[in-house]
Amino acid sequence: MAPDAAMTFPFLRLAFAAPALLSAAAALAQPADDRILYGTRAGMQLTTVSKSGIGTAHAVIRVEHTPQDAKAFCVEYVRDPSPACVRETLADVKIADRVSGDCVAKTWTDMFGGRFAFLGRAKTGSEVMADDAIRDLETGALLDGSPASDYDIELVIFRQLCPGLAK
Image (cartoon, rainbow, N blue to C red; front, side, top):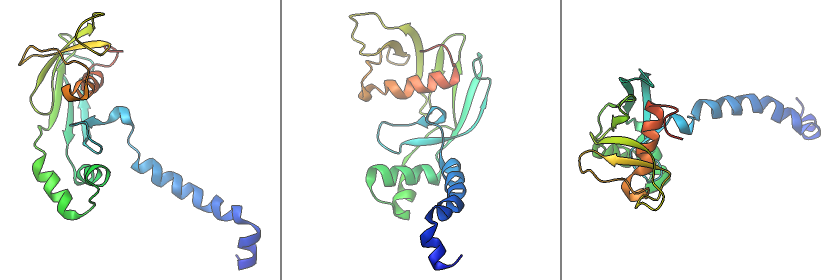
């Protein structure tokens, strides 16, 4: 295309570039509802490797902390895109290779080995600031709904293992 034609028909450049941009964006995008988080800071994410038995007494989601996940944390939270930050993050994050649940009993184990139970709707006026009640089975404490209690992280894990049980 002649330089004058490119100036006269700038939409042609966009028409040729748009499919490539869309396919690149689709390849990079991972639906938020398919992501398992290991913390509340930006970029604290894990890659889902596989799922089996979802919605049953033997639900398992296999996860992995990849270099791409570590880079997301380095870029989005630490603001350090260096390979050293990625290596350090990979070395620091110690997780199991799965989260698992029993959807019949409404219990699950997270990637740190924590065990939890979904108790249903929280009672009005309780110490819980959330719609649903989750109990830490090790301590017996209810997660209060705050980011410090990791309520949102645990609720997402339960929803992915046992869809439809928590609203």
